[in-house]
Length: 415
Image (cartoon, rainbow, N blue to C red; front, side):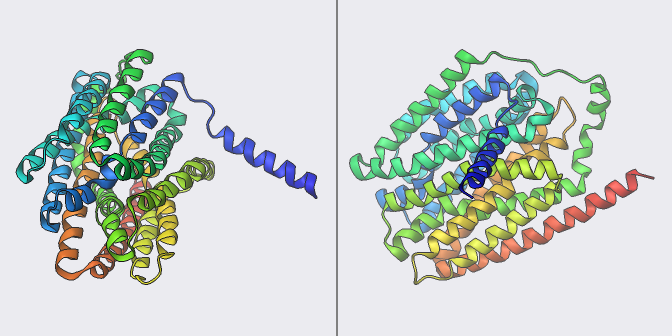
């Protein structure tokens, strides 16, 4: 019996490891760079707490600063995608991380409300040019059959970085204050992109033989009804997910008196769950050829359930259960939404398509912060969890609408 258990464990381990095989060297280096960058991204999980508790801004002011965070992210995503198609993803990635690293050094010295609105906006324009450029780089460096797994590998690096970052960030805050976060964040941006620049050489995107035909058909994306409804579902999942970095850290402190370190540990648990389980889940879905939009829709539903759980406000253990369900929701929603979005793009226009896709999450960041803070300010935390959970149910319904539209689309293509 013990021998059988050992063999089963060995097979499970080998199957897990096989999910990480077949990637080119450049994909692994990009993954390492992403991990270093995200491990140092300690400002974001604590930004709302820093603004509220350290600088003394009101809920309304924190909400507006986070709105400018999202507006800058939207503009940066659009510029990053457009410029990736024009001058290449490689130059955009290097500029974005190096410049944003320097900007984080300066941000710690800016403490007035209007200056922070402007500064956060400017930093996010620069920093979020990186995201669509990085997605395009994967379409170049990853083999077509490995693209979803390559996206997942990079997401694992992001989540492993977040697993290390918030807990360490909480200790830094308790030890030397919030200023330490800005120094670490800036330094890791610069270190990460120097590694990328040294070890990865620029590779041009190849234009497909029917490039000119695709150029003529490019505008059809604006008539792609399933894609735009899918973006609405993505925006809603983003709104729900970003509560982890806006309203939920404040709720931890005010309702359950958690320290920054305890909040960091909950986020660390989220990162570890994703690190160990996301790649096997993606591998299983790929092997079984399960509908990707359906998986994203299930993710949206799980996010709604996780936020409804916060209506239980008398037992701190619910925060652990909520984070576990949110982790599975994240694993379902995000890797497959990335894959679906890039699969809709014709070659040569991946940057534009991924810009639109990433802008949906930037819009989610704007709406998540402002709506969440406003609902809490006017009606309290309970009303916010009820509102967000209901919004998740709407996103779930939209997801199933997309599934039916794509089924009709495929059926029509047969005739």
